[in-house]
Image (cartoon, rainbow over all chains, first blue to last red; front, side, top):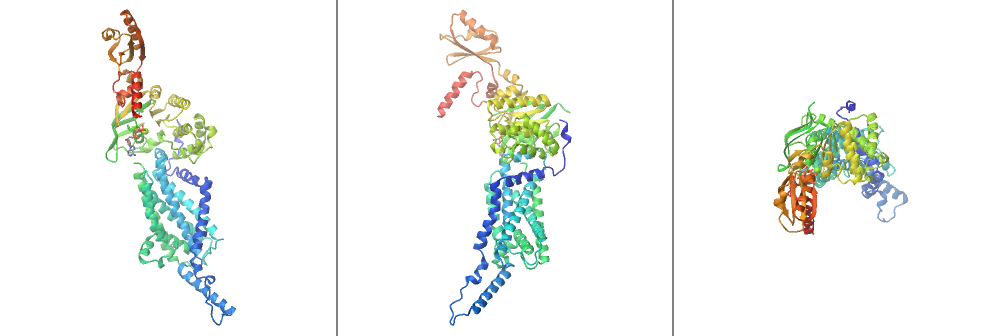
Length: 302
Length: 333
Ligand SMILES: Nc1ncnc2c1ncn2[C@@H]1O[C@H](COP(=O)(O)OP(=O)(O)OP(=O)(O)O)[C@@H](O)[C@H]1O
Ligand SMILES: [Mg+2]
């Protein structure tokens, strides 16, 4: 009974152990792991093509009316080129890129972050119900660490999934913008890190007192709707009806996606916009993580 | 250091503003003692433990573990206690070994020490062969043993066991008893346990508290509690239907005689001495004894006396209690 002095009394002990526990549930379960890889393929392949707005304007979908006298092959080709140019112009001015799948893929990345963080929020309830939380609370591990481990695991998972989405999107037609350099990837991960911090703190805060999953589920569904649709995931904000724009302009996911799009697919980067986007998402993350930690001190122990 | 490992004064927990789960309880547990907490479902046992292990905040009152206040010095408390909870709390998706190491990490125990301790503990609870299997595949008994190993990883001075033998088979239960005795003997650990098995409490606990409706009704050693019932019960039946009360009452150690269902219930301070005397006295008067049984009070009787759920009359013998239960069971069908 004398070896008790051989323990670290650092405030953060247990953080990696608890984070790794969450991650193991994912990377050690082959089906879950493979599903998280397949999911983006399905989303991109199906939705990306079904909603491929660009194809509406493509030359192949347009059959010129039979004219008299008929067009010479050169004229037909010129007309085709004209429509192609028109498509690119419309796409470029609407989505900031000529390929809708590129626009979508970035939305997909943000979505994955949203869902991953949502599930990490729900795992607080499971931990409470299955007694694991009580056990952890009876040990000297910091209450904030219990929350931070969930935030961190959701963040790491989202980052990994984002990388997968990008890798998969390239053969499906993803086009990097003219301003893209490999260093921008780091910037994308910085965005992801911040948004995951904020979102998972938010979802955990919603779940922190619950012993049942139903109530927080309803709250989360209510939140998810505006978070997804009033964002620039599928469509640029400027083209939305005004009331939706109002919601979308405060939605941190919009800032994340717009920022990531600047880094990945836009032809040029507007650095003052980018700074604003980082600041907005960063403040969101800081405020919600603080709230999450304060709540964990107050409410994890009933 | 003080003589007491656990001290509670006026400890109270009220849930949702109205449900009084634990109601101003006072008790203390001496160093190195095995203290049993008995009581019906919902009596407040787990709630008491959860307050002592700093998981629940008391609504009122205070308690200390090894002199550390559970509210103000909760981190010191957490370092010195181990917990084996009522539910299975191990992570199903991890292996047994990973679970133990996870517990060690929660205490900030360095990997060098924790791997060695984990190996020792796995051996102690006889799970070494299964250590790399996922907990999902463990049986109930294996899970309980794993919980025990997790609860011991930080070498606690005070160990809380919430129904440690719930749902275990006879062999595993016996093995668990042995661990518990060993922990007390070899490490001088103080143990606070709850159980519904009264014979287990009788065999293991140095002292017992019976709690009901959030209040402690009685505290004492198993012997004290049994003695408080006032002695052994002798049941006698004779052939002829005559009153022998007067005859038996005069015999040594007899405290009370009662006639019930055609037989006599005799309460004696010393059943072994009284029983032969009864037979002799009855024979002398020409009565034929058709049946005689001697029941020593067990904790069962004590428990039922104090919690009074199915029997308030402590004079009733085990037999008639059994009959009564059967009747109740039949009525339910
Ligand atoms: N988190 C909670 N919220 C509300 N009520 C609770 C909570 N936990 C326990 N209770 C109530 O407090 C009372 C005491 O419960 P407790 O779990 O302490 O009983 P127990 O003695 O451990 O019972 P058992 O033998 O069934 O384990 C019960 O009425 C229970 O319903
Ligand atoms: Mg209980």
